[in-house]
Figure 1: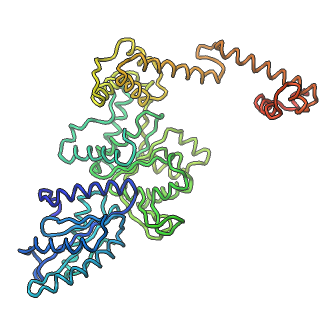
Figure 2: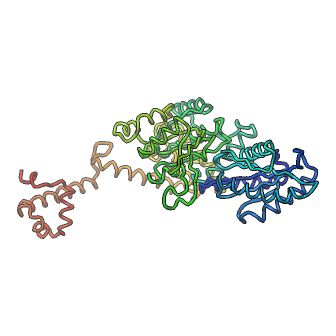
Figure 3: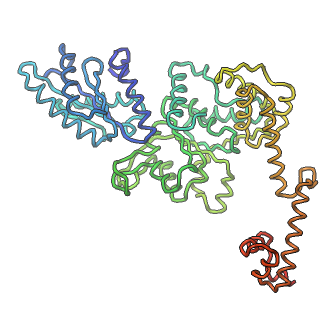
Amino acid sequence: MVGDSIHPHNEILNGLLENELKRSLRYQHFTSILLFEAHPKGAIGKDENSLDTAERMEALIRKEIRETDIVSMYNGNAVIVVLLYSDKNIALKVGDRLCKWISNYLCSAGKNSQTLSVGGACFPSHATDSRSLCQKAFEMVERAKANGGNCVRILA
Amino acid sequence: METAGRGLLAIDDRARADFVDGSAHERTPLIFGKSEKMKEVERIVSQVAKTDITVLIRGESGTGKELVAREICARSLRNDKPFVKVNCAAIPAGLLESELFGYEKGSFTGAISRKPGKFEFANHGTIFLDEISELHPSLQAKLLHVLQDNEFSRLGGDEDVSVDVRVITATNRQIERELQNGNFREDLYYRINVVSIHLPPLRERREDILDLSEFFLRKYSATFDKKYSGLSSTAINFLVSHDWPGNVRELENIIKKMVVLESEEFALREISSGSRISVDNANQNQVLSNGRISLKRAGKLAAQEAEKHLIMGTLVETRWNRKKAAELLDISYKALLYKIKQNGLNRKRISI
């Protein structure tokens, strides 16, 4: 998943993220990312309707975050949020709030109900380049999935 | 070279790209020279680059200490990770701790949010601490802790932050003298001085001057889109015989000027005036390198001596009444006090 820069979503996001990390280094502030991935309830795997779900998630997240933060589709089935000036504690709070907010929509869709897994990583605490940062966030998503979903995981 | 923020990253990205695509051998080396001393530097750089060993780079200002640090980083296994440069002399001592180690929210007035330090940004990469001898003693202890245990706490924080950073330091001062004066911790000195690289000044490697000149000529001709045929024999003689107190940085600026102005004359005139400045500085010791005193200096010394005698005579005459002496000499009281101090006069000496 990570490093699949062929996907147009990833190309754009990587460029934006790289710029934001340079800015963070220059002005010495934290930047965190949150990776949201939804999967059918009870079956953790690729969802056939994942693109629709991701688009819905993106629209929901966009309403709930600051205008300065960046939201983008990632790999076609996930959504990534870049939280500027946010350390891991803030990212955890935001992630938790967004997770509850989106879960309400995804879980209330009857037989199409979904489980949401969220992973986060913070620059420079967890990684110092965009690729490693996305990798860490992806690892955290996997941990959230292993934990049954509908939760946020960020490295201490 | 680019020195801050964005420029710094641009260089890193370039170096990173060179290595990531496996074409490391095609990368233009940041240091070069055919002199024996530079070959020795090159050899040490190759040997230490692949390890995580702490390196201390010494050399006069303008010899390229930062470039050597970048070269070590580019050849190391951390070349795709950040290279963070901190000039310890450029940041006030009170701010340096928060710059290096970051701070927690509320740790002091104005600390409105938690801030990461340079060490966190350099995590898994390399941090280059320039002018390390200027580091305040209180910070030296904290730096020693990071070097030994790979962890530190942010200013006002109680949480330990673990980092994996390679430290490269540089200084243009005799750090051993700072040790003797008690300005630099001995334990930190031994910690940073695992491998020491001494960069020779340009006057000690004159054989590299022409190569460097050619390099800068090509570089700036391309940058400023100017056509420059090459150096004349006069210019070559001038460049090779000059002492270069500003080292490679001075040479680079002279060549840049030659390219931009498309004339050797202006640039060489600047070297000549620079030499005059050196001579004037040498006059502070009153004697030129050939053992003679210049006419200008001789006149100045004679005037100073005459002035001293007159002031001494007047002070004796007025029995060290400085107000009266100032009136007799037709200068202000303040000016007389300054002259007395400048000439090192005192009552005891005059009465003798």
